[in-house]
Amino acid sequence: MTEDRSVRVGIVGLGTIGRIHATRIDDLGAELVGADLDEDARASFTDEFDAPAYRDHHELLESGVDAVIVGVPNRIHEEIAVDALEAGVDVLLEKPLAHSVESAERIAAAARAADGFCTVGFTMRFSSLTQRAIELRDEGSFGSLSHVSVDYLRRGGVPGGGRGWFTDEGLAGGGVLMDLGVHIIDLALYLLDYPTVVEVSGRARSEFGEYDVDDSATALLRCADGQTISVETSWHGTAAPSRSCVVRGSEGGASFKVSESDLAFVSADADADVDTLAVEANDMHLAEDRAFLEAVAGTREPPAETVEEALVVQRVIDAIYRSSESGRAVRLTE
Image (cartoon, rainbow, N blue to C red; front, side, top):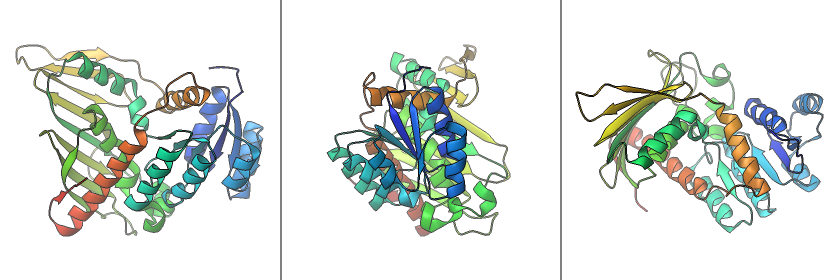
């Protein structure tokens, strides 16, 4: 933590995720401002953080900020992110990139042309266990990676009880795939160093609520070099809650849960014991926000490819939906 408040960060959207970021940005010592259409949300933010709050992102940008964190419904991502990037402001955009592939492509184009940088809130990358798995990969402990299996399963975990914007297809662009699936699809691709995805087969379901979006989904991704990824996600279902990842390679593999403190390493030698590696669990949001602030302050290199990778994830999710509708695998093209 630091007492240096020379970096001024605007939080656009003062709901749950906005407050999560605001708490950590405040703890890290940056100056806060906020923006939200809801008057009560603005008043609560000002009272808690002793910081000004504006009605919209236009007023916030005009007030002068170095960076913004965008935590609003997916359909509104494009307007706010593009305006901020065109104003020369650095952006942390909550996942997913947008509500549609077309909107995501326009954000990516704005990021390429911007003086500032844009990163996307793939929080699981910042888990200490994910980083330990990356170290093992880079050390060659896995050998040639072949498969990653990821899941993110809840029970009774439909946001807002099914009555908020997360289950409004017009605002969210989809259901659990857009909310939880985006995290684990990025996690799997990140561990594989983002290979080219060539084919997607999946099934999205809506089984447990009075809404039109998916509340569970299953998918298989095939990559250009033969690597595969399996994905399982649900807001509610008849499976135990889980956030797990299994990595398999020619020399070894690993399994871990992103929010816990142990990673199991399994050697290709069947006679070798499973090696449990103790890794201290961390606050993923705090690590993410610290990295963002350091990049804004210029003491850390900004993330180079996060928006382009988020665009890949957006295309994969779109392909899962199309595969589910058609009953056939979907080929991804450049």
